[in-house]
Length: 430
Image (cartoon, rainbow, N blue to C red; front, side, top):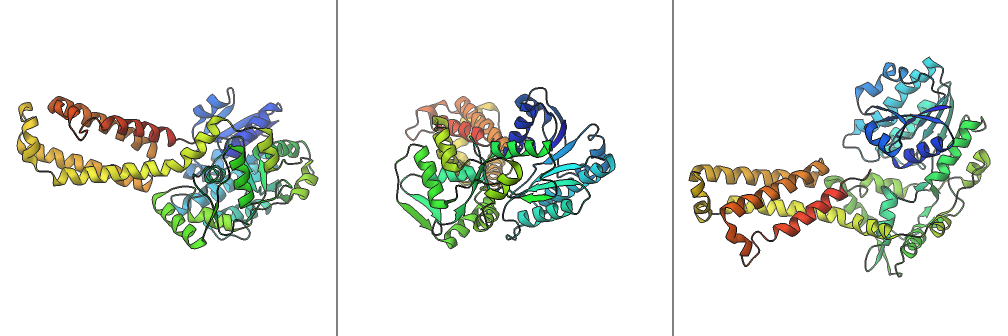
């Protein structure tokens, strides 16, 4: 059986690919970076497509990739896009074009991964997902729509990473509101196992299921379970008022501190519980609860590191932004006569030196703006490393005495470079 998978590189999609290949099925993956996916899954058939592009909204593009395909699984999604149209493109337009091609090519079986609570929520994410589900369910295809509860795994991503980070928070354990929000969980491997069973039979065709385990927890109970799993002692629970949480989410929107966004908060305030009995009856898969999952896989050192670094990641980014802002201001405010003698021996005129100072200050402000806006953070981390190395090398040549400066004129660049290396490392999640 050959299966076309959208979103194959994602948190859920990669688990689906793993389950399909483990059961002897052939996978064709539609991803932005096929080479990277093939490194993770050697021998897999993958082709390049950006679901936000006009190409992905063309049924003709998909028809050439449906030859020999028996079923399609759509696990693509974007919670907080930079532009509204991206959500519609990924959730509705590209899948619509694909399903047009499925009808033309006779590919009947389609399984779509949606999200629980989208009927109640009014976020862009919920509206676009709901529209996509309704469009699929109106088609003459053998469809199944899955709206899972909170999906967890041995690793984590997005909201589940935030749960772990909250659990590892020092001093107190913050929860939104009264902490009594009910949560259902499902492991991504259990969800993937159910999808394999769906492909083997017809029982779930025409159904909209809400995969979940029967072990329902409150937010406080879930965070406490993660904290115990990480081996951390209990701390007092800090109940964060909704107004404060909303203010933090607005800040997250402004500086792109995902998943601290108003969309994530609105989805959290919606329904996060599924239908465990219905899911088990339809698929035969009994999903494991969170406490069972945590007990079955003891935490390792990398789990604690990730939980704590997840909280530090935005702090590092905004601290670096402040560093570049102050550096830019200092460059503009400095008296050129104090520094020009150090470079005059290199044949530079005072006017050229002043122009260079202004240009470098402009670069400092540009880097700070990119960090604040969350723009191309991986590339910006590399640019910062290059800039600090260049500053250090240049000043070493022109003013080597700064290495022995009482206030650490150049010596401070060494820990800054180390912090930038950490920043560069943290800005890759997949």
